[in-house]
Length: 260
Ligand code: ADP
Image 1: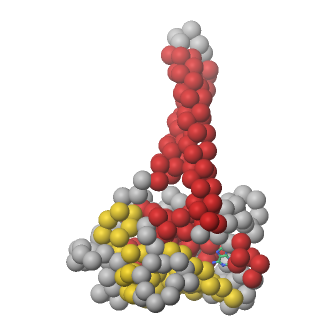
Image 2: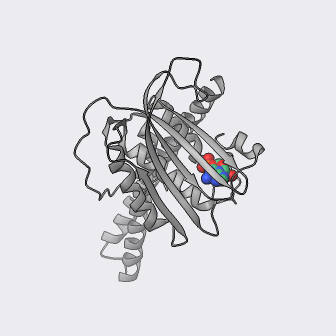
């Protein structure tokens, strides 16, 4: 547990670092935009100069939208927990992943329509599942199958649960791939912040730690099972909502790819 807390603290520290950088960067971009706007407006400047100033203003605007994204990512620490229809969320994600992971990867979901709803932040859950989907794709360079499954699970009070879950009613989400899998040594470190086996620029080592932090902050847990050459299953337990299932969500969610 001490390890997990240390990890959660690292992820939080990273969020603070990111938002600090985003703020500083915003100030710099504002200075650039201000100066370029003054140049653009000066009638004594040649058209070419004013045109270049406009290019700078537009580039600074794109930079500002990136810092905005970084800031909203860092602010994720305040989750908006709501009752989510499990089958609806997984169906959305299956569609998104089917379109984004490439044609060699088959994506399927195994969810009974009467699977109980979960209590979680929708954006965070979607981001977590997309993260797991991209990891699965990276583990299947020659193609394969990605399966999203959900089932209700009751955790009893008889002895501690291997994942540290408290007794209660959960929905268990399994994201499985038929990829390279992980050996013992990699599996042991996989959810450490900054641990990555991917080439620089492709891996940050923050995917699994963030997914774990999301599951635990939601009152659930994460576990990984993996076999070299066979594949990997990442399991998330999320608290089951006791309320009735809300009406199915509309399937067009524009905001789910930002964390991919
Ligand atoms: P990143 O994807 O940026 O490397 P993660 O924290 O998501 O960061 O994953 C850490 C490491 O765990 C990966 O570099 C990879 O070695 C391993 N890993 C994660 N998911 C899988 C998977 N589905 N199959 C095989 N290895 C995986």
